[in-house]
Image (cartoon, rainbow, N blue to C red; front, side, top):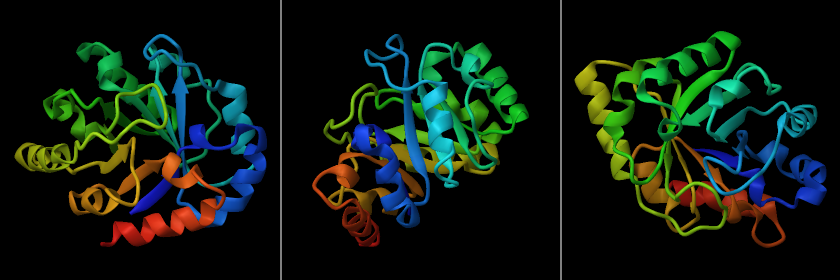
Length: 218
């Protein structure tokens, strides 16, 4: 199980120090970009992402909760291996392929996010074009929400990829993940999680990450 701390829950006034503290213990970072339109919250812009990119070489999973994800493809600083993930609900079905194609052409890994209430069939025709699929286990917009068990979608997506005879993208999950549920999430086939409060709650992020890794193997 790969753990990508979700920096929205970190101490933002000490973020450089936080990243230095945990960088050797994580697989990457989950970065939520919200535009106050697709979701009623506002987070970071390109300058902030560029600043983060200068202090770590770990991969970024950029999670775009925005109305117009295509506009962000060329605006964000990234390294090879960084992921550009946008919500299937944010783009008309006829336009999803174009955004995936253009982001991949720019050099990104690409993927789609699914809200808890969205059926997996919405991404079926795009499975072959994705590197990752992000299953939301909260409704997008705010950190600290309670976990909604959407792990059944992992099984559904695996079955769908087999039916379509396409390679399954890396299965990811984001929202409300902690020691009590990460084991069952891993058993469902999820390979990467964005973890927010479970990492940044309390005073010892490194120990929290270690506890999550142990719990994921149960």
